Length: 101
Image 1 (cartoon, one colour):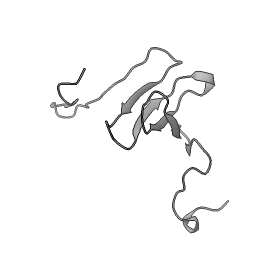
Image 2 (spheres, helix red, strand yellow):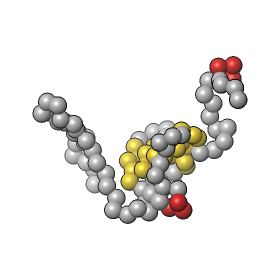
Image 3 (cartoon, helix red, strand yellow):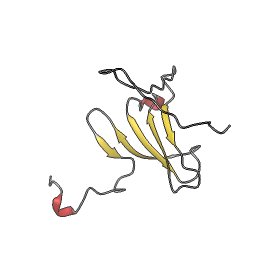
Image 4 (cartoon, one colour):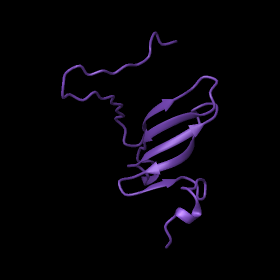
């Protein structure tokens, strides 16, 4: 069904946090937020990845130009690393500004 309004989260008490919590009771499945634009260029999914194949415990950014049924992994964030899913998919500025080994 079509939502009646946008989702708004507002905390009116001073010094209190306003949080949106998405909980999944399975350690094997993701807890995620999907950001879809009808007729838009790209849809995104941000997921706290479940423990499938021992790969859980990281934040994943995924995208899809059409449907979020089969999104493409783009970036991964752990407590110690940030990396693209595919090698050489992105660059971080001009090569002259990068650190050397």
